[in-house]
Length: 279
Ligand code: SF4
Image 1 (cartoon, helix red, strand yellow):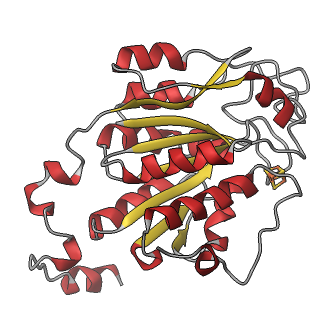
Image 2 (tube, rainbow, N blue to C red):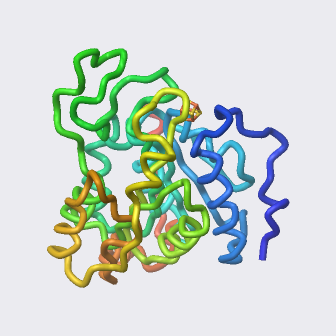
């Protein structure tokens, strides 16, 4: 079992004091340690945002890419070496706006990847603009009269799009979050974990107090339809926990030639001619 200290980096997070990201960061280290995973076999991918900096401060392999692109990167890593544990990480702006299209296609692919979304219902790094999960009517600098559109419901969208593990966690309940992260990482298939993460600096509505009064724990629902029904609940009561889980063939399990990791396969193509052309 990797010790927590072994996952520490020299640099320390520079999130605002009290930010929900600290709890997500600590939970992930705890989950990796408790699962006994080897850091060298883990790859984290991320995009842009406060949340996307998390992989900088945990000693595993990391590829920090463009805004909204943690999932295509994760997919590339998984296809190259499906023996690796691949964790994509990002925020609600990164993942549901810039990366919204990737999100849907990731869910339907059922690729064996864990996707952690720090959902603070706002763009934090760019200093407080409305995100796709901002509540309708929520006032920000860019929406002085309140958000006009309805908020995206990521849990509902993930279930409807075919993800085979869909859960919601809360940064204010670290013990529960660690359990959810462990279950998501162990799951074979597309695992989406949307994490309610208070942004103490720019979101003065969805605070720890606000969530604390509303969140309650649920057990996994039996069918996709019943899970979708439960996922519709948002407001005075907000369910957290695993909504839906099923074991179905993963993306690579549906491709016979992917039984062996690509890097270990003897299937070779000479691409030197192509590379020459691209020069
Ligand atoms: Fe956290 Fe918000 Fe500060 Fe970003 S701006 S570090 S999300 S509190």
